[in-house]
Image 1: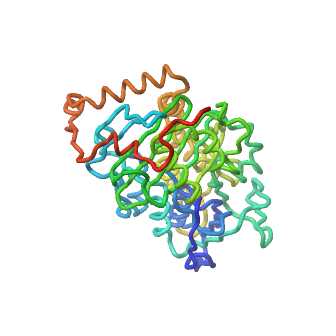
Image 2: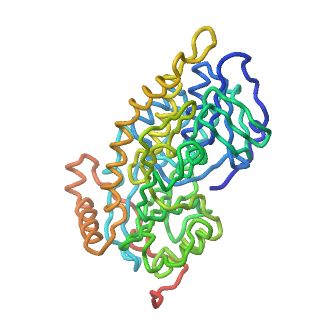
Image 3: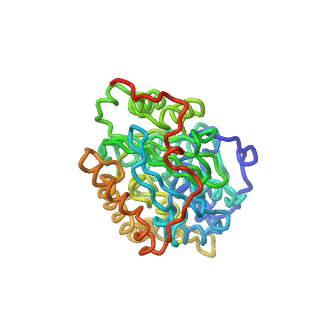
Length: 423
């Protein structure tokens, strides 16, 4: 992901003299939400982040109802707004650049959720972070023990609580709970995202193009007031992906996997190469029997990663972080909860049902989101085609809107080759 400098928050903050001390590892959605919530609960909070500056960018997310409610409780909801234009159209395209469906984006609208990019949410949480919270960039734990002892680059210290909010490849989880392989359930999928410098072809704000072939998809969103975002998902076992390294060389991997697409894809790949990628990783879930051990607790993707297919990852990270402070309220005398372990167990019991549901939904949705063969691809295409019928729009109350643009021309115009390259 890209980074931006935040000089106003790189030094020590004014820390209250009393109260238990918490170290939050990771300055993403889960970590920033937990930092604010714990501070409000009376903790003295420090955030350490491996990156040299705050991350920005990221792919498109839909913040579900529980996330919006948590954002409101944290006081950051007014900084969030939808990135989908009111008259958006979702256009399906195949590998040859041919339009296969057109669906009114309003069919997928949910009044209880909000469409935005991950960077919007992280920016809102960053702006809402209390001044008393200390943030240390370019800082990662070298040792973490379950008694709260942590070794950072400036030496060892003991904390009353350590929150591992450092993502699916969590260092805290590795040190305290064990190797990632013990808890990770891989989907054998790859996800790569990028924020493009401009729109390809004849696309305009509000266009949402989904390019689908068996085992390969790409979603390009021309969102309101934001640079266009594209994210790719593909099966790691595709012949195209053989001997590629999507994590270390994502642009090279994209060329190998999507290089035989016509239409918009050649120009999209050129724009990705120009801009660089913001996220590249394999897709997998994390399953742990417990999320806490001693004075260490895991949060967000480090604890329960449901994957992007669930549609609830950001919401669960936000609500889980916000709930942590409510369960770890500091007493009036400035001392921490009488029983931290019991408080963490109660927090976990509250969060478990939602994460379990989200993981199950993701396992089902992955087949529609990334069809593995031509039969499933065809079924998906028919479903989208039916959804594009005006009568369907009327039944679901959206009222299909007509765009003043030639959609076929929009999604197939490209500066790339007009013929499909030979395999």
